[in-house]
Image (cartoon, rainbow, N blue to C red):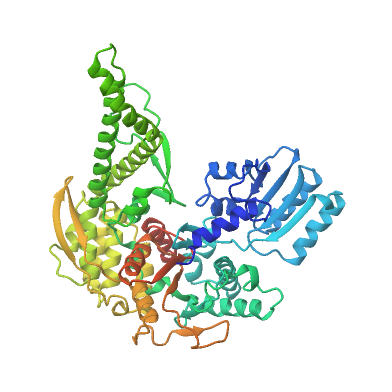
Length: 611
C-alpha cells in the first residue's frame, strides 16, 4: 500500500528540519542544534504531525512564532517555515537587518513570487547578510493532515474560504476568484506532496466546478514545463503511481446540507460536536461538575486541560469511529486489564520484600525474580497505558454529560428517522417544546434537518406554528431564512436516496444506545458511482478532467480522494472510512476546505440568513 498522506507530509517536514537533506537513520551523532521560526499557518501544519519531543530529537531547541519578540541568537542557524505573505517577508527582512541568527534557511509553505524573492534579496544586500541566507525553498505543504486519510486546507483565516464566504449573495467575481485560487493553491500542494497527478471529476455549475477547472489548468501548466515540473524525477515515488492514478472527486457542500447539522453517535464525531476539538487536540474544563464551593468562599478556578488524540494512541485509532456505547464499554475493559496488571506488580513487590532465611521465602524469591524483572521493564508501558485510560475516561465522561443533559440520543434517533423517511414515534413539535431536551441550537438543527429532508415544504400555517415553538425555545431563526432560500434552488429528493434505519436499542448509563446499519451518505454515494463507474442520474453529467490528457487510458479503481468545497465534518469522513472497509482493496482519502462542527456551520447559516 502506498505511503499515506500523513507519512508523506511528515517525511517532507523532517527533511526540511534537517536543512532539506534526508534525515540520517540510526546515527549516534548529535543533531545540529537550531531554532524553528514559523507563522500560525506553519504551526498548524506541524502541530498535528510532530510532537515537541520529536522536534527536540531533530535538534530544534526553540520554536518561536515569527511575529513574536525574539532575542538575537547569533551562533545558531534558523529554519523558517512560513507563508510568503507581505507581512512575513517584511519581518524576515527586519530579522536580516537585526542579524538575529547565524544563518537563515527560508522555507515557504506555498510558492513565493519572484517580486517577493527580490525584496528579500534587496534586504539581505542592504544588511550585508547575503552569505547568511543559505537556502530558499518552496515546500508546497500548504494543507493540514489530521489522519492517514484526512486533510483540511487551513485552520487560520478559514473564514476566508468558508461556506459563508463562497455562498454570500453579495459576493463579487474578484472575491470568488481569490477564494478559488486559495483553494486551488492548497490542493496543488497536496498533489505535489502526494506525488501524483489525479483524474478530476466534478459536478457542473457550482464552486466545485470552478475549483476543478483552475486545478486542471495549474496541473497542466506544471506538467508542460518538463524541466521544472514538480511531478517528475525525485518528486515522484518511482513506480508507485505509474499505472494507478488517484480519482479526485470534487463535491460541493450544497449537495448535502443535512449531514453537517446531524447529531452524531460515533466517538470522534461526538467529541468534535460537543467539545472543543481542533487539530487533533481536545480542550476541556476540568471539574465542571465538581461540588459547589462553601457559602462565601471564592469559586474554584476551573483548570483547562488539553489532550492530544494522536496516531500513537492505540485505543483512539481503534475506537474513534466506534458508536459511543462501545467506547464506554472498551474504556471500562481497558481499566480492568490495567488494574489486574498493576495488582500483579504490587503482589510481586510485597513478595520481594520478604525477610528471614526460611527456605520457602528463598524459593519463592527466585521464582518471582524473573516475573518482577519483566514487570518492572513493562512499567513505562503500564504508565503510558494508565495515562491514555485516564485521558479517554475524562473525554468520554465529558461527552456522556452532554448526551445526558441534552438528550442527544433522542435527537440522533429522530434525525436518523427523518433522513431515512422512517415512521416517527413522536411529533417534532413535542421535542422542540420540551424544555429538558437539548439547547436552542439542538432544536434548530433538528428542525433544519426536517425542513431539508421534507420532500414538500410544510404549509405556511404549519411553518408559523414551528417558528413560534422555536422562538419560545429561544432559537434564532436566521439559519431557517437561508435554508428556505437554499431549498428553492435544490430539491430534497436529490439528497436522500439512502434508506438507513436504526436497528437496535438497549439501555446502559441511563441513555438509549443505538447501533446503525451501514448507510451511504450523499458524498459517499457520489464516490461509489464514479469509482464503480455506475450509471446514475446524480453523477452522469459530472465533468472529466485529465491534466495528463490521457483520457480513458488509465483506470482509477484503487485510490480515490473526495474533497468537499465549502467545508466538511467527521461524520462524512467516518462514512467514507466505513465504505472503504467494505470495499476490499480500495483506499479513500477525505479532504475539505475547512472542518466545522454543527455549531460553527449554524453560525455561518445564520450570517447568510441575516442578509
